[in-house]
Length: 384
Image 1 (cartoon, one colour):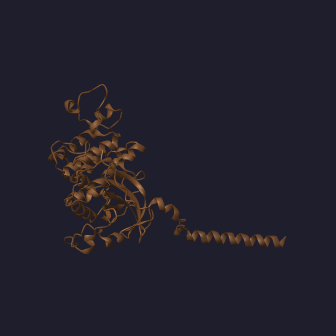
Image 2 (tube, helix red, strand yellow):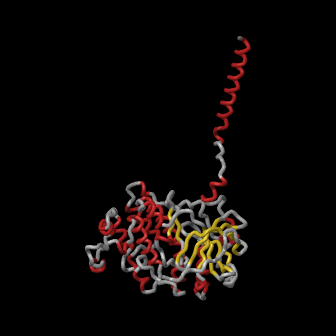
């Protein structure tokens, strides 16, 4: 186990970089801590991840800055983009401030609600695939997909996000962990190759986990059968799920077999192809309509494609020295700021809904009728 991370010692209410009002601790792991924060000059919440000071080593950190800034430029949904990236001055802790997601990780989703229905999985997959393809088209590989960095909403599975792009590469560069994640990486990642095809392999593993509640690589381990998975060669998804007491439609098997093909060239060409094929397989019911563009969660709006706003062309902003805060398209970020706060704060600022305007004529008629009845009642009382 890696050593404990030194706390940033930024008390709730203190300022980070004259931009963020710090909140409470959201979570922590070996090498990082995540805090809630609110932007000081606009109504926007963020999750700020503080890395161990060792992560600031060059050239790995500058490369992570480059990747984070590039991701913030991508249009569409499916990626939890960054608002800010920089270095905390007092404790020399590198940090990334990203959109604050109010829905759970896939790991927590399964733990609290059980596996996703195939319909819900198809909806989430459509959003995640779009984000993953957009990153791949920009030359960015995630390299560390797992249930803890994929978020899916309880209320609407189309509200889904991927976080922690290239963090596994950053960890490995600083000797804080392996490049490949045991149980969640493609075979070629074990040899040190992180590719787009490897991300799609990992996405297939996540789909199996979401549909069964079981991780693929230990689904066959039983007390009575010491035979290894490699010797058995069992790679039929529905059979492996059944061996652990889960149910999975056998129609899932062929799709999953292609997703986990040993030869990267034999896998789906894009994540979008994976999602479209998934919907085609389970298209006999309500899952048949593939969401061409998912509705973004109103609490998870991120910076837009700032390059498109500035006009076509390469990024013109120079790399900022690591000791200073690296703003991620601040003008574009403010343009796409959410118009209302996350659910955790919204309840304190709610207001009564306005009546529909098309009821106004009827309200006038009812009022006139009541007034007429009052006049008749007064006349009748006076004539008695």
